[in-house]
Length: 254
Length: 310
Image 1 (cartoon, chains in turn cyan, green):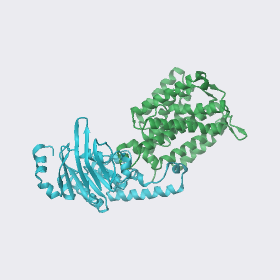
Image 2 (cartoon, chains in turn blue, green; image 1 turned 90 degrees about the vertical axis):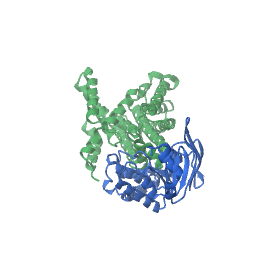
Image 3 (cartoon, helix red, strand yellow; image 1 turned 60 degrees about the vertical axis):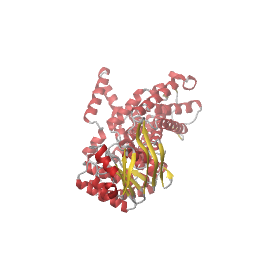
Image 4 (spheres, chains in turn green, brown; image 1 turned 180 degrees about the vertical axis):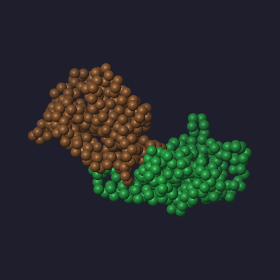
């Protein structure tokens, strides 16, 4: 279980997050919503080690994550995607996913230099695994193409495939539906559900309310760096403070 | 490149001394080989991790001085001296890698330039050890068992063996999860971290291998020219390596070798063809044309023209 306690992030004099606490139950799909600037991505960055919190604790299965490098956090099974499309642009879809499989490889530096025979078998196994992940996101017909040249929606799928390759137990998705067409969003929602069925816990930041309310078990609402509401989608939709945050105080930003 | 083409090249390289009689031409081939090792070494950093080392001559020079000093002052034989040159240059690479751990782009370049500057000053001013600007003459020619590798033909094969070894090391590393981690660093560092690639660890390892390989080139150079002076640290050497890697095709296995052969042979050919005023001008114009028409290098252009079957 991911537990965030009193998380605070300050940039100089600006407080991005102020004593934020929440839990993410294993096996759930939990969404973080809130107006622009509420601190959603900042929370993601703090959880995954891309920025050091000014205060508070983040633990995963009771072990602290604070102070670890992103790669060490990934090794613990927590993998994220990025708000802006983020692939290895000059590599083929296949090589993108192979790179995502980094932690699944066991070949060490000296073993590689010595050219051990078992490495050939390992490379083959990794290629098979890459193919099955590419198939899962439905990009088999694009596997040899350069990721940076794909249409936007497909690049987001490559990004998801790279993250899945790292075998997450907890997957953090930063606006997986941003900039996608309605049909593409349906595909992504379906994929997210199927990933959860495989036992992966999902935490996502998303602006599309239909998507959030459709797939989430729990919704956490951030505003002004604080959690203002937390609960099941139906309860959140009726929550007076949430309605005020979206329609009242900061109209137009949501 | 097709397999048959590759074997044809290997055969040509193996029989080269039979084809060319002139010691001068063989000298050019030896220098092309030494620069081939250096260019491949730089390519590991510049081509795969995307980090430009503009102090690469430092590792080359450390290799040259280590090998020369050990054979001259401690009377080591060539092979252990060569190994020590590789090891010491590799250690210097580790030092630079650790120093530049969090530095990328222009800052990485600055650290490497400064390092080369410092090492160069040491070689000039530590006169008791290095003989200062006068340099170290009389570096012995290598021996292999009872045979001396004094002749150009023998030395050609020694250098060829080093080229093949370096190429194989690069190929194995690049076509593994190690190589993918380096490319991930070049392509998108935050994303690489997010899937568990410990980026700094791989950058340090790449710097060690790259520097060690440059040290190998340095040792071969010292025992070939039989003379080492602070000139081995000249910025020109680094620039030449960069030109070879970029023109040949950075981030490809064959690119640095193609670049090394081209830019060792080209100045010599120009020397034969034109008077000295025109040589550098022609060299410059050719370089501009290359960058203009083949911005990604010769080998990537060839691969695009003749895509490999998969």
